[in-house]
Every structure is written in C-alpha cells, then in structure tokens.
Amino acid sequence: MDGDLSNYRKTYDKGELLLKETPENPMELFKKWFHEVDTHFEGDETNAMTISTIGLDGFPKNRVVLLKRFTYEGFIFFTNYESEKGHAIAKNPNVCLSFFWHGAERQIIIKGVTEKLAENLSDGYFESRPRGSQLGAIASNQSAVVKDRAQLETDLKNLEQQYEGKEIPRPDFWGGYMVRPISIEFWQGRPNRLHDRIHYQMDAEYNWVKNRLSP
Image 1 (tube, helix red, strand yellow):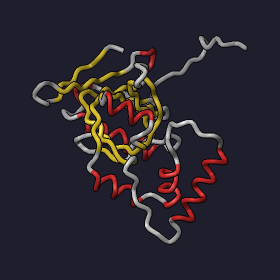
Image 2 (cartoon, helix red, strand yellow):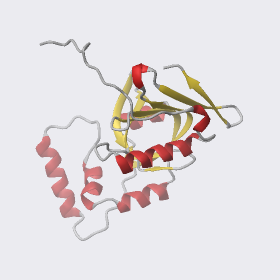
Image 3 (cartoon, rainbow, N blue to C red):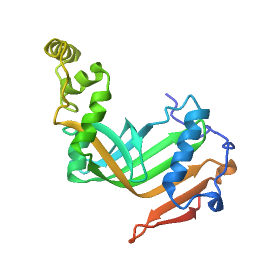
C-alpha cells in the first residue's frame, strides 16, 4: 500500500479575510460566515463541528457533534451527560471546537469553557426532537460497551411499546451544553499557502482583542 501523500495539492483562492474589515466582536463574523456557507455551499453540513476534550485517561479526543444554536454568549450542543465526552467535560470543562467548511475554504477554531444548560432549555429542545431521536437518546447508554446491534434494536423496540401514545420525558442524563468562547480564530485559505488568520482573544476585562497571525 502506497501511503505517500506528498503529491496531494489544492489551490485556495475563493476568498480573503482582511483585519480592517473584521468586526470587533467575533460572534458577528461567525454569524456572517455561517450564513454565507449555509446559503452558498450546499455540500457542507454547516453546523457539524469537531469538539476536542481531555479524557479521563489524559489524552485529547476529537469527535463531530452538531451545533444547535449560537448566541453572543456561546455555542450550544446536546449530548448524553454520561458519555465519554460528558465525563471528560465534567472533569475538565475546557474544550476546543472547530468548523471546517471545505467548499468555502474556511476554518474556525474556538477555545472555550463548557457549562450545562438550564434544565428548562434542555427540556425545550428535547421536546422538539422527533420521537425516534427521543427514544434513541434513552435507549443508548452512550460510549458503554454493548453486546451487539440486536440488543440496541430490542431496547428501542421495548421503549416504543412502553411510550406508545405517551409523552416521552427527557432523561436526566441527557441535555445541553454551552461553550463560552475565550478565543476564536478565523482561517481563510489563500494562494501559495499565505492563508489569512484573524485571531480574537478575550482579555481580563472581557473585551475582545484581535490580531492577524502568520500562516
């Protein structure tokens, strides 16, 4: 098997990011980029983001989750609190989020601190999910070893019977997190690998300071 990838090449030429044209608040730029990608690049799953945590074993781990809301305060996603990522966040709430939108040749890297959402907000989102997704959240003991696929299917079928014609309550072990950013970097691919990188850092007085970084 030939594992040499040195000849892989891509030219980045779809945009530019100039410091003088960026807003003072990075969330405004995030909103602008998100909607541009969502509107013009259908091949990108715009709200798919990688979240990196420091596991209980001391190793970092990345996985893709779906962003469900963003505000000026931060980025919201939902998961099983008893999952591997949930236990990692409970021990160390410092995480890194990243978006890569290959169609637009853009990347965003976010460092932030994670906190659980209020229960009523998690309740509201859980109620908005399809019944299949609600039952799936209950059936899955996320990250735990499972005997086989058949066991998952059986558990789901039993829950379907249990809750037939009934409202499905949100389980205590499932809910939302908000990641409050302390730094956000915007990357725009440019020709000759001279990419644009604009970095925002929150200072001690909770003001955003922005700089251009060398590629």
